[in-house]
Structure formats: structure tokens, C-alpha cells
Image (tube, rainbow, N blue to C red):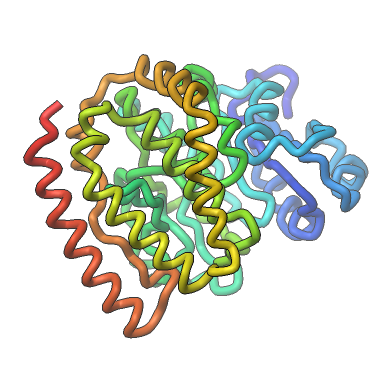
Length: 352
């Protein structure tokens, strides 16, 4: 990075025991930086020696070591605290990048002042001809869906607005990130990108997909011991912060149907961990005062009505992303039709 130029982009990577992935992808990310870009790597209390490897192999990388695991959002917030760039760019450690991925994101933000967050065309590392996600779709129930997952990469080659960015690779202006309050560190893991995107949308900002920015992601659909807890707890928290009370009341049929879907999946696929759903409910009850405090902060951002937010959600559940074959298609068709009817009903009531 040139000492005589202001920093253009601060690229931030959070690593938690990701040394193997860093050894594969970090050289390409470093090579993609411009002369006035910086790379900040936050080591999130790893035990695999990754921080020492980065320190020795890439002394130009600014290494920030956290002695405790701050979670994905908290560690990224820590990284932004060390950033000097006009733009902050977030990318997962288990990625490999096209040489112009970063320039494409920054140029998209510079070219259109009506766009405030931009996300890459993210392909599966194991099969780069196939999409992992091209931005995310937000379901009316708050469930986040990978846009275009499993489809041929070339089918998503046109820029456009998206419901949310993917936390695997996206960019925004640093000052906007700070104005929004950064990531909600209490999420710890999962849904932080959707929550940040929807807070930005509530404030009148837009997110867009940039197909020229190509990133490969070592994505695998996995359900660890606590994933359902974090995903469900964070979905409830996000919705409670985002919508007016009247909207949440009107959304009750949607949310109850969403509970039927998620409980069905848990009982079919994760029966031994069904307690995670109950833990998510318990967390909301136990932390109600905290949720109300967060809600007040988020509502101060409001420039967009709930009606606009709801209109931009999808009613298609895309269950085939987690359940393939005829069963997944049948379930998807049935529930997507029900959610479509409920979305129409919701829009008839929500005019605020």
C-alpha cells in the first residue's frame, strides 16, 4: 500500500481455525489488492497457528488477534475499527478470488450513488460452473435464501438489486457501516449479513449484485450442533428489530407457517437437536429488554415503510436448496403457494 495515497478499500477477513483455507486463498486475495488498498485479517482466537503463518508469509497484512472468539459479526466490527479505507470489503477465509473481484465491487459503488452495498457472484469452489449465491433473497418469514443456488453460473450475468448481500463477499462505504452500527455482535453466527442489509434498507439504502466480481466459496450445507439455535434465534431478533408492532401482528399467520416449516425440518433432519428451537424461544424471552433496546436503535434509522420492505420479500421458500428430489419439489410447491396467499393477505393490511 502506498504511503502517499488515501486508502481506497480495507479488505477484512475473519479467521477461526481457517489456516488450511487461508493457505489456499490468501495469496490470490493479496495479489488482487491495488496499491492503495489494505488487508486486515482478524484471528478470532484460533488454535491452528494461522495467525503465526500469516504473520510470516504475508507481513504486509495487518493482523489483529482477538484473545476471545467474538463471533463473525463482532470480529468483523473489530476489523473495521482498524480500517482506514473509504470502502470496507468483507470476504470469507474459505474463498478464492478472480483477479478483478475487488475492483468490480468498488467500481460499482463509485459508479452509482443510489447503490450502497454490493455483493459478488459467488460460485461453488468444488464446481465453479455452479452458483453458491448471487446475493441473497429474503423470505417474508425472515428466512434467508441463497439466490440462484445450484444454477449455472452464466445465468446470473446481469447486475441488479437484491434483498440482501452475502456475507461471504460484499462491500460498502465504511462510514455507512459505522452509521448503521456495524454488525449486531449479539448474533454471533449466521444471519448477520441479512440483518445488516435490512437495516440499511430500512434507512433507505439499496443492495446490488455485481456479476463481474467473481469469488469461489468452499461452501457445504452443514448443520452443526448449534446452527439451528443461532439461525432461528437470530431470525426472531432480526424481525423484532425491523418491523413495526402492527406489522408483526399482521404477519402472525406467516410467522406461524414459518414455524411449521422450520419445526418440520428440525424433526425430520435434526430430531436429536430439537431443543435448539426451544432454546431460541427461551433466549428471546430472557433477553426481551435487550431486544427492545436494540429495536429502538434500529427504528431511529427508518426512512422506508414496512409495506416497501414486505413487497421486496419473496414468498417462494426454495426448499429444494436443502431437500432435493421430488419430495423437496412437492413441499416447496405447496408451502410457496401458501406463503404467496399469505403475502397477498398481508399486503392488503399493511399500508404503513
